[in-house]
View 1 (tube, one colour):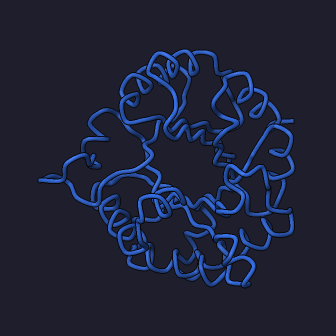
View 2 (cartoon, rainbow, N blue to C red):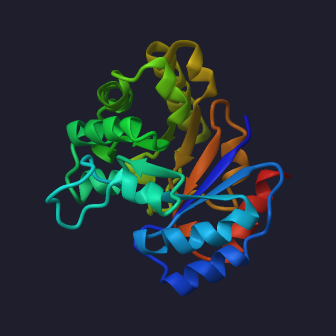
Length: 246
């Protein structure tokens, strides 16, 4: 399985900055690359990305497809501008915007109905980690969001493990923790998806940098990375992806 590196820009980058960034990204032959910009840059970046074979995703979407939902963006709107996939359940959506497991499950359902590939983000807080509840929390997140999926849906699914306590803090989960959690996620996917589980990418996200990306991707069941701060400068991001193939 090819490694997938996703740059999640969050609420950063004006359109001109985004275009400048993507035109300066080195082309890759051995890994898959994706960028997740703001809604406003998706269409233009998709046009530029076609020549570079880079996927363009969305940071969020509504569980509704149309209607009186001021400020929301639907899956069909995203597909209309060429969006390739969507992040669902990012820890900042859960924490800051109070998205519950139930809301995220509805977004997963909408993504499936609209044939929109998605990356489901899961992870524990520091309190949950210290209480020894990591696997219980992640099990519940996966169960609630994915238990209704059928065989035909699993090729649209990727998972990102992002320990909340490691996002934007500079702290990185140890090799042992990443290995343990990714192995647990794989076993849970086997329970839910059967034989399809081996084809589902499991990404790691949490203070990923050029200095640690190679070690992280060498861990069993780590199929890629969700990169935040280290993806905001083209030079830094090029350094990071250059480490993947070494």
